[in-house]
Image (cartoon, rainbow, N blue to C red):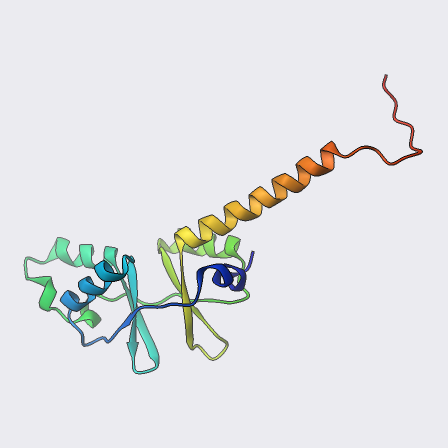
Length: 152
């Protein structure tokens, strides 16, 4: 299954934030939208991504009140995917780089959507279920008429 197929079911909504916004504002967005990451945009340019893990990593090394820290100080580099990428490839990339969200971009690098590890797992399960059903139907089919099947 391709990313474009996932997005047909999921939609293209993406929550974004400015790099100069505070982590407090970011936390409100994460909570309000019940999401695990926010794409950081400077105008129409994607400059990073901030996940719950980024915030926890910062909390682990700093005793400061993180809510006043600008988003650009906690954001990560963005790995991206395209509409034509296969979900199996995305699963491998997410596992290798230990990320749970990948922004989807067009050929010009413009942000279109975001795909989560949950979206990828659901797509893979749907694909495997469909393949299983096809195999079950194939095995249970009657042999074509006129064909002799030996019962030795």
